[in-house]
Each structure stands twice: as structure tokens, then as C-alpha cells.
Length: 224
Image (cartoon, rainbow, N blue to C red; front, side, top):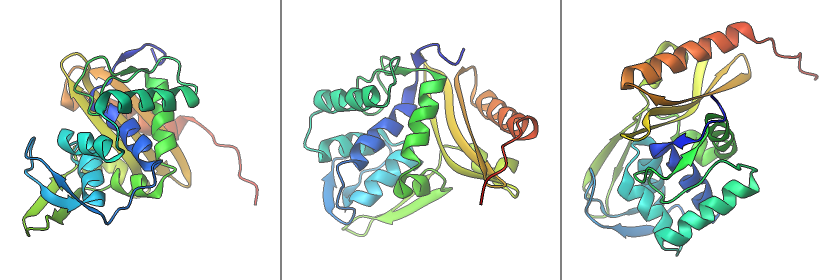
């Protein structure tokens, strides 16, 4: 069912990050973030907000990325939809930058295209493959943002495999979701699983599909 539209929860943040990246932000700029979610940030750098949104899937950080573009959430969602349209994603629609709205929908195939697009950005590729991220506010308060992608501790992130990017999403209407890009021997596979019944199953399915793809598909020889 790779073409069936479904709610995608926090996989939404992949498009949020992509639209934000295209504004060419000042990564060292210090901005004020209100207290909400899992962190009471205060004043932190833009690069820290971006990493918290992708690595820890923090909703406040995702909202702040949208706010930093100068758009309100409604207009930012429209910008996300315009980007989806430009990528030819006819079954994708966004209502907010966090994924908390169940009306953020896409298909497994179109999510895979979004992940492929954002991983062309080195900043996103780096963030989406980190186990954790540590940073401090201007006031000196230290934060530890742990990745929500448990597969970073699995066999598909050990030689000869390497996870080059991933994002989880969880919502009642969406189930347990995962988008994952894995490299082996210079080749890359993108796996997307939506509406899994449990946290465990989404990771098991992704591992199985990744292993199967690398052991089943034969890549054409690359020309020098």
C-alpha cells in the first residue's frame, strides 16, 4: 500500500526542516524559545533548535523553526504544501509543522521522496543520523536531546550498514511510523513504514525490509 494516503505524525517534521533549510538560516543566531514540551529552552542558537526538532522530535522546536521564517503556522503549512507540490507529491498535505494534527497526510512512497530530498542537505543528513545532541542555552543550562530512532543502536547501523538519516512519528491516528535511509557498500535504501501497531514492530519491519532489500536487489555496476 505504498500509494495509500495516511496520517504521518512527526514524519511531518522532515518537510518542516526542508522548508526551513531553503530560507538559508543563520545557524549561529541566538533566539528566544518559550517554555513548552520537554525543554524550557530560553535563548539558544538556531542550529540547536533545528537539531532538537529532527533528533528528539521536539514539537516546540519545530514550531520555532516555522516562526523563524517570519510566517505564522497557517502560512508555513501552505509553504510546506507548495514545496510538496513542487516535488510532485500529489497525495501529501500538511496542516501544521509538528505532525500533531492528524490531517498531516502522505503515502509511504511520497514520504520516501521527502526523506531523499532533505538528505541532500548536509546539515539535515548530519542531524538525522545522530544518537544524541547536547547543547547549552545562553544562560548556561545544559540540554541532552536523545534520538527517537532506536535503530541507531541496531545491527543496521553497524558495519557494513550505516544509517544516514531517519525520522520517527507517533500519533493515535497515524500509529507508529518510521522513515529510514541506510547505506551499504556505497548503495542506499530508503524504507518507510506507516501505521504500525507498536513501537517494536515499526523498527522490526524497517530492519527486515532493509536487510531484504540489500540481499535481494542487485545494483547496476557504477561507471568510473
